[in-house]
Image (tube, rainbow, N blue to C red):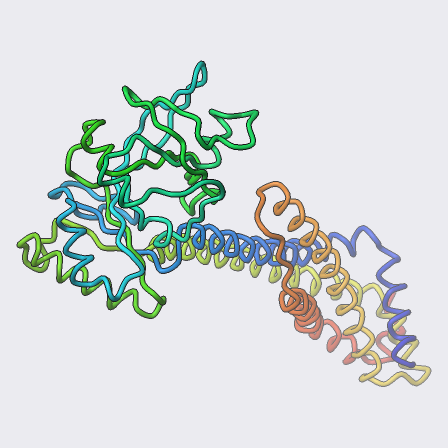
Length: 403
């Protein structure tokens, strides 16, 4: 019997019991679809995370007061001051793209009858190059604005749309922040959400001196933000900043009242969570494939028992044990591959749905598709070999006598 004829006979045998064949391959369907969907979801989440990471700024280093209690929070500690930032700028400025001082408050910003609670950020002109942000209209803050404690501000895209919903530009307009009337001098290019889900465009920037002196912000800083010229320098620069601040704040190693961290550390946590979830799904998918393989073995053993007389007839007219072995292996392989193709289709459909619903990039890995087909075929051959071998070992005379 030719190979094509063997495939045709195998498919005919499987189609005799369509429902049984489908239920048999259901474990393989579930396993393959889960693998395809989760590989796509994991890659999509990774790309989305990297995109949001780049929106924060490349090679970003955050300096905060207090002892770290999580990847994103600190507690206690002596507040950072402009003297700390000045020391970093003077001693390590050649290693950095800039040093930006940041103090943040939550305030209600108003324009006529429109009101919107937002993040009010007092900062310095070095913030845009450090964070990789760009001005869309107008300009950002200058050193002259800081010296004069100017009543000016720059709006994020979200805040601009809230306060100036029907205007193409807010440049030259004024907004009220507590007792201050601030003139809008710039609008920032939209940045989207951060890896932690915060809307980076829902902000108002004003000179740090204006916030500290006219809004009662005091001298303390929320954080100092800086960045390195390349990713390879991050660990070394972090160590240099830590050593400098120990000296500046008169603390010993192990008793630091500040925290120096990079954005990469924050995103490493998210990557680890994604990897663990993918691993758990892979384990579940593996169990489904084993269950599906056992189902293939079971149905093939049933098929051998049901077709014992047919096997005897084939052997009587010249079929060799190798012919019988290959015939039943092809049936097991066809059953497993059919489940794999159905699972592949469902997995791709689930990937499209998740990408559209959640909003992350759709990533279809060719390697995952090839691996899914290969694994489903391997499951069919592995679990189908014993029933096929058992069929090939039947004695023709005994098989012909079987009822």
